[in-house]
Image 1: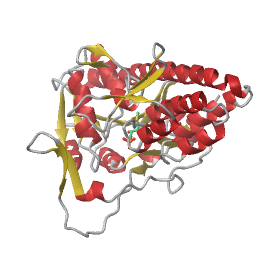
Image 2: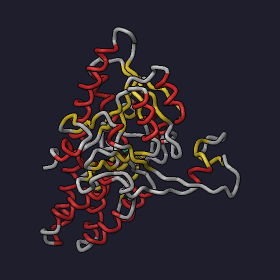
Image 3: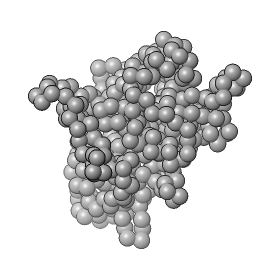
Image 4: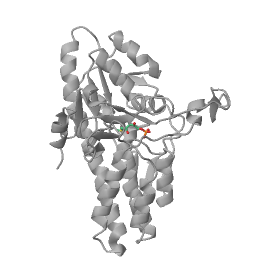
Length: 360
Ligand code: MRU
């Protein structure tokens, strides 16, 4: 992604200083800050505090976390995997990445493990970029077809997205937003409706910032506006990401995704989920009531973060003191509401038959 004229990734390794760097996403959109991850603990903090977030990026950062742990202590593979696995529960990419690291590192003698761990993390980093680009191209095929049907009666293709499934949620390109970027490259006049995505506002803070950096036309809407826009014919298609997709095609993604899928279904609007195969939990038959849904703190519900009148970041309380809260971070959209899954291997139905066929 191009940020202020420079080509950047959300995580990268710099061999000159043996450094792992991330973009601190808790500071966006107000400040662009780069952080160095120095050890296992800082990698765990980065994932848990959401300095890095988004399923694919969590996976790659965890792989670098393993490298940082082994660089310090070659015998710490199991401890490192355990600590990283405990950071966030829902995105399956974390477990996927840790299993891949363990499978590749266990046979390696401890004194060589750090070197191999770095190679594994770098391979995963490069693969993620290629996978996201492929997802974008497959999704752009769908968007182009849709545009062919719509271009005679309207001047833009309106895509609605939820949360941030962009370059910031992956190493680069994103999943849902890769579809947007690749569609624009084909000269389709795309416009994106961005759900703010309470409580943490990843849509407002991250997706709007990222689309702005890429000069993609977009409009921020409150989470409750999507259904109305769909009824008004102002949404042509929904494209979202996924944190964990079950074998039957149920999709677990940021809280609020389900309600958008219901509204899309009611208005006969295609609802696509863009995801890498690493976001599919092939061990899970169905998603409903089977996925550990992250429960987050109540202050995310009772307060809103932003810039204060003095220009410094701060929190504003919107609810009465002492109010009781509940803050589930994700929900499950049943497969019947999903038009198709857009993967690096192509567009497939959200069904057990199609998803099983993707497994190596
Ligand atoms: O809590 P977050 O910000 O990590 O949630 C991110 C999402 O829900 C994304 O939609 C999902 O990880 C897909 S990212 C390509």
